[in-house]
Image 1 (spheres, rainbow, N blue to C red):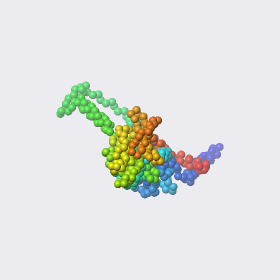
Image 2 (image 1 turned 90 degrees about the horizontal axis):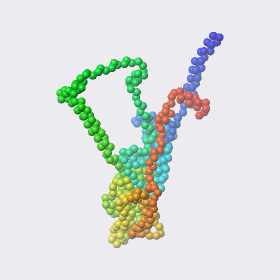
Image 3 (image 1 turned 135 degrees about the vertical axis):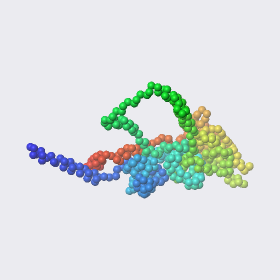
Length: 433
């Protein structure tokens, strides 16, 4: 019996070693490219590099909206695959599928908005996904390029975007264990003796001045004063006004919609009309008809909206200009001031009858939105109707923040434990998955 047992005992290490070798061989044969998720390119162009370093070579260049597959994650850097090309990019330059779907829905809705006039770019101008400098720019307007104005918005200058950078997830900060607690956990350590007691006359010793030194009471008062000054300084910084910027929602000739800085656009209304703006900014304009002047040629009647201050409205006054054939000049036919006006201003297409009809949305003193309809007969403007709106004018941007890809989960999936990786490969070998 003892001889039989001894003859079977050496087989166990051999069988274990054989199974272990087979596991390694099968895992090597079935290693394939893993897929952690899909994403879309956010900026206009994206350079894909062969290595994590920014100095590495360029693999390929992708365009806005291109779909990529995520195969690896290293903190904020993501390895993607586009066709046969693989390389590394910054996670801030990618959008999740939900984010891209939301952006496409916003663009479809914005393409249907009525134009509020045309504007030209002073210089090469970036078009952003959102009214934020940190939002990716997916297209550009050439110098002098014309675009349609769809809306406007005021946003903080340094505000972060809401639809981008969501691939980055802040990792929780793990509190470090104090050294004493770690030493106590690790094992035996020498307990230090208790500190000595202060002398009996410690109060008298503390109250003495040496070479003009301050007393403890004066030192405490100085510390309290310094803390109060620091708190007052922080409170003053918190009360500083936030720097705001004007953004304009535009539509290009190709139908692309996006946000640009308003200060880089110039309204395309004729100069002989714009000179009557009285220092205000023209936010929209519309043609209401035309007349043929024998001396000056073809002239148009205009409706425009203007904004004088920095209120969060689209316009605070509107005006109708007509061309006076007898005096050969522009004159005001109708004007409304000191109001809270909102886009869109709608002008009905010209019909068979003389004149045009347009609609103005305002917020009245009772905090209700109303749409007023006016009729222009070629000379005078008449109020023809007022309609209460159940809600405010349609928003031109969605404020929701769609969920992005969780790089923490991706990184855990991309770098599993060694045994789990080998076991998954073995299961995939036999199941064919």
